[in-house]
Length: 154
Picture 1 (cartoon, helix red, strand yellow):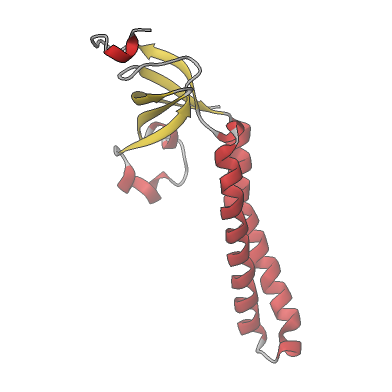
Picture 2: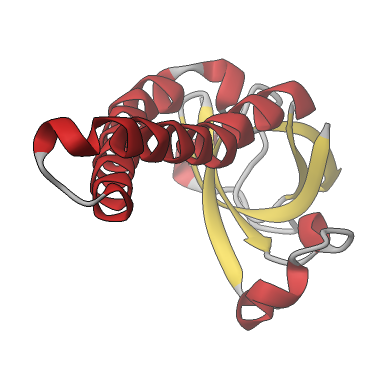
């Protein structure tokens, strides 16, 4: 499970917007040097808020590791496999379509990968609506020191 700490910015029924520093989750990543430009910048994330954290609370947000692994597979591995398969198909089909094999490999591989990204974009709508892929508040680390507001009285 990937865990990150953040501060609750807004609260909605069952959900919250959390502001998270963009560095702790990437600390041990081999590719962190490629995205150091984002180091220290904050990002806002919509999360499931079953613990009813309030605005200003410091919270722990978690994403199940299995879900993250599945999404990584779809985003990184599958497009590369489709690109290679498309290039192989382009190489074999080159004489039939009247193109040089290297050009056909590039064109067919590019089209195949482009179609894969289009399909993944369509699948993204499903993933965004699925709670299995949505981060959630797993612990309230500290409560906000704020005055009660009118919306708190029930």
